Each structure stands twice: as structure tokens, then as C-alpha cells.
Length: 71
Image (cartoon, rainbow, N blue to C red; front, side, top):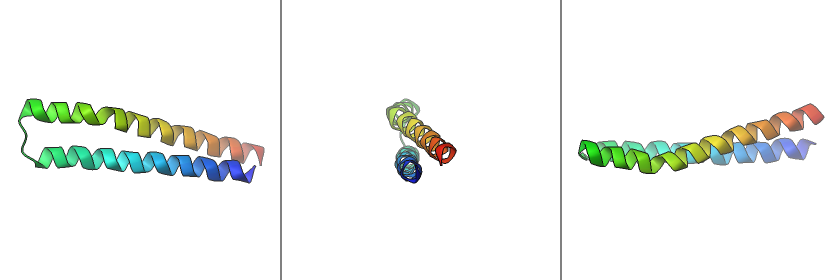
């Protein structure tokens, strides 16, 4: 079941990349000098990526734990 650990690690890594992309997107919007409403819209637009990436990271870590438990 070692392959399950590596698959889970890859899924978690993809989720981490998505989280970093979300952080960079919001940081870029903050530095661009948008108005309060425009900044709020930009943050709301980044939320699906943020939540999806967080979900992928959690699922990947769960797969790693299952792989470790069955090893």
C-alpha cells in the first residue's frame, strides 16, 4: 500500500499549490489599489479555488493516513 501514500502525497501537493495560487491572487488584488467593493469581489472570486484546494489537501492527507494504516 505504499503507492497509496505516494498518491495521497501528490494530491496534497496539488492542493498546496492551489492554496499558494489563491494567496498570490488575493495578495495581487490587495496591492493593485482596488476600491473596497472591488477588493471584496476579487477575494470572493478566489474563494472557490481556496476551498477546493483546501479540500484536495485534506483528502490527500486522508489517503496518506489510509495508506499508512494499511502498510
